[in-house]
Amino acid sequence: MANTYSQIYLHFVFAVKHRENLINRKHKEELHKYITSLVHARNAKMLAVHCMPDHLHLFIGFRPDIHISNFVRDIKSKTNQFINMKKWVRGKFSWQEGYGVFSYSHSHIDNVVKYVLNQEDHHKKVTFQEEYRQFLEKFAVPYEPKFMFEFIDG
Image 1 (cartoon, rainbow, N blue to C red):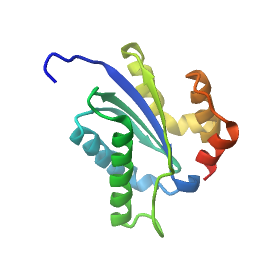
Image 2: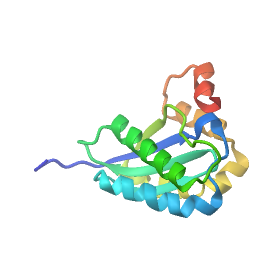
Image 3: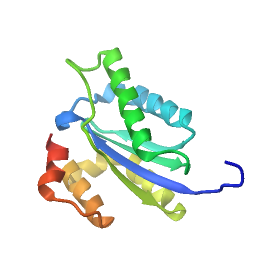
Image 4: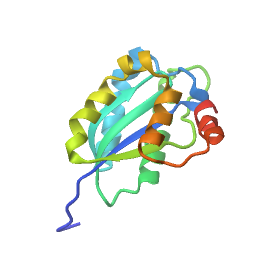
């Protein structure tokens, strides 16, 4: 896309199916590297990634020619295959349907990167459900609480 310039920064959040604690700490670094390679293969820029046992945060520099839904579908699909190939969980690993995506301006990059990388400490104070609801409210995303918790609780 010659002569097209953009600065799009997106924060993605999605959960493990049934919010199970399936992402083991000992596999996080390898999974982060794999996800980073997937992001780069899609011509996006990884700014921060952090897997908690039951959910994932990605903060990415995005291009306007990337379709958000296709991007998330591909990341989820490839990581499902990767985790299952590695046999890191009993049974079959998969991500929950749906996701959250929130946009930020360039001036927020440092704060969002710190937030994503600081998930361990953050979740000592706030549950994933509380965190997700806070995102929806902060970004004025309309939601039905009963449906939001279906996403979170399976």
